[in-house]
Length: 616
Image (tube, rainbow, N blue to C red; front, side, top):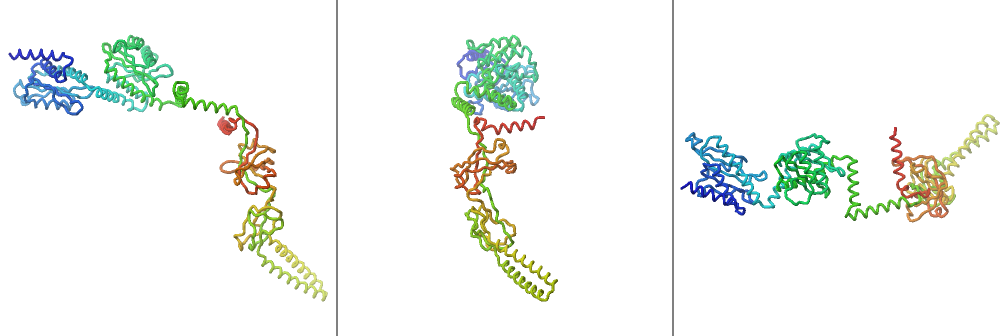
């Protein structure tokens, strides 16, 4: 009677298992009954699955359905979850060396995309070790139906998340090694191992052709082999269509051409092949080709996973390739990107900017302008007289200072003359004394004494004349009509001055010249008689005409550059308004030149000099 009930339950389980719209609990109960009958000798069983949206595991099916003590199954199932592998534990009697028919507890985890999503626990009767291994293998094979169940009832967003997570795990191999070649080989090898492929190939787009850069399990490969060329043609087929190409196709009627993939399968004797274009920034940069052994095809989940890997790997590969590219490759890539923006659709801003640059270049190439040499300038008097101290003394009066206009003979300053006057009085008294001695010697007719006293009188008169001359020079007067350009003793009354010390400088009022410091790189363009303009700092809104009069061979080093002194004369209008010492900027007109030459000749001259200095 028990056998009849068991047979009926087994048949009912098969009918329920075959139903497509059964719930997860019904599917697991029917599967557990079938699994227990297939293994045989099962006294108790349980199926535990991960509750959706949580991290806890709950039982969803029991065998038999009548409740009994299943604590021993809970212990072995928890151990299988922790260890992530199948577990076999002997029953209590067998562990104590008891009867030979003591039961065993078996547990095997259920995985989905590499993650543990459940566990199956069984208690079976005693059997030899060989039959125990067969029972574990039956449980392992049977648990794949639970993986089908999990995929069927999986949340689409959760499945997408798991697929993306696995894709990121695979792509992380690209980031573990610094070089593109090494990381690409490791990446393709990891893809082949994790996705069950015989070969995974990575190709990069170079111009309009695809060149293989990495093959799984092959750090080095023959680039001219027929198989390699067949893979490259398959990649180009997918790149040209900018779509995934699989052969045999995963579904009929998909509008893609796969003739190159069919030829690849004939060449490699593989069972199926799929190629996915690699994209970065909307541009195809390469392709990934997956090949599986004969008899194995790519199902839809596998293709979706490969597509996720390709979408994530594309930007990373392009970034690593860009970091390893040389200057010519970077320049060529930038030029191609710029051309695509200018010649392709969209990017109106770039097109307008290119038109503006082209118009500016045409204007610079055709338009002409006046070429002028600029130089810092200073206004000086044509004659500049220095008034120095005639003697060592002290300043007693200084009514004028720099900037004041003076007339010829006008007193500028006076020195203290009291010591000179005392010296003059002493010398006059000494001369009178010598004159008295001269008269006495004449009266006594002493010729020798007369000669001596006559010499002393001449000496005293010479000294007196020198003092008189020094007294006359204590008054410092203007030598001509002009302006004081330097010197101010108004704040130094009573201060000592040394003989020969320059106290003032006076320049004429209306007779000026302009000194321009021309850079040595521009001096070759300057010639006598050229016209120009001067702007001074005090009057920036006015221009004064000038004419180059002399180019002096005087070289002046200033701020790390060499300058030559160029003298120019001003027009009549400028003489009435300018003053010596004014500074500004002068520009000498050379000739008409192209604007592009005017703005670039300095750089061109520097480049020619640099090239010449480095030539052998």
